[in-house]
Length: 190
Image (cartoon, rainbow, N blue to C red; front, side, top):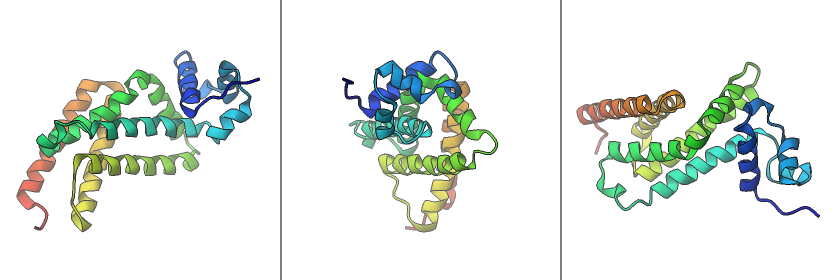
């Protein structure tokens, strides 16, 4: 008789296997074997291996949203709130930084458009939650501009974080400082 496992159990097992090899070589059959469950039990939670990557991003989003409950957050100015929330998201991924790099490399391989387009949309979802958690309220054209700038800054920060957390913080702070200067000069209509 096999034991019941959760999606989190499966993700943790896959990440554990990936810690000893490259993400590309992780096989769902090996994850099932490590949990002593049939492969069909994994399929009930994850239709494919890429869904495990999305589950890890969902974990980071959940950490970001939990971070939004920090009682100190409302007292911070917007750049400080955004910095704290972005690094809460990144810190959720920190134990798996090498694996996260490998996951992204697999997604960026030529011919993986079926994975790349949803990955871009996934970034957009995270940025939407980031805006909500930070209490950003811009609307219409100003919201679109804000989202575009924040998405660009988020991707630049994430890319730098994959190599060096200190440099990532510098990039984020620099970008937020520049955005604040622009907003002060041309600000949204009241």
